[in-house]
Length: 75
Image 1 (cartoon, helix red, strand yellow):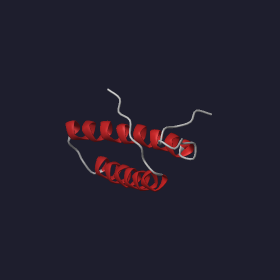
Image 2: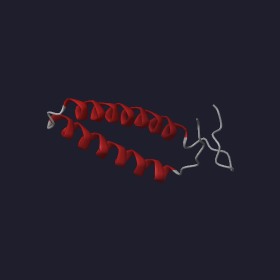
Image 3: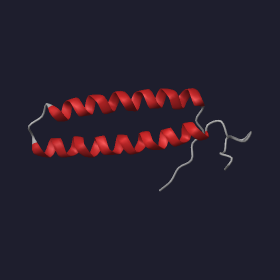
Image 4: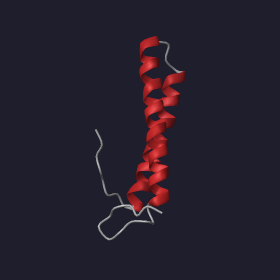
């Protein structure tokens, strides 16, 4: 399932900061837990946040190429 959102450059910056903070906290938690199942859940969360950050990075690259309705203009 895909969804479309229109996000401003300022919102992308905030999202980027929040995701980086979450990534740092999750990595710290991963290092400090001995529970195997919990570690696996944290590892999946880390991987998901990393993928999300990649998407945010791509969106930030294209943030300057929006048409008046907020849709990306493909270069």
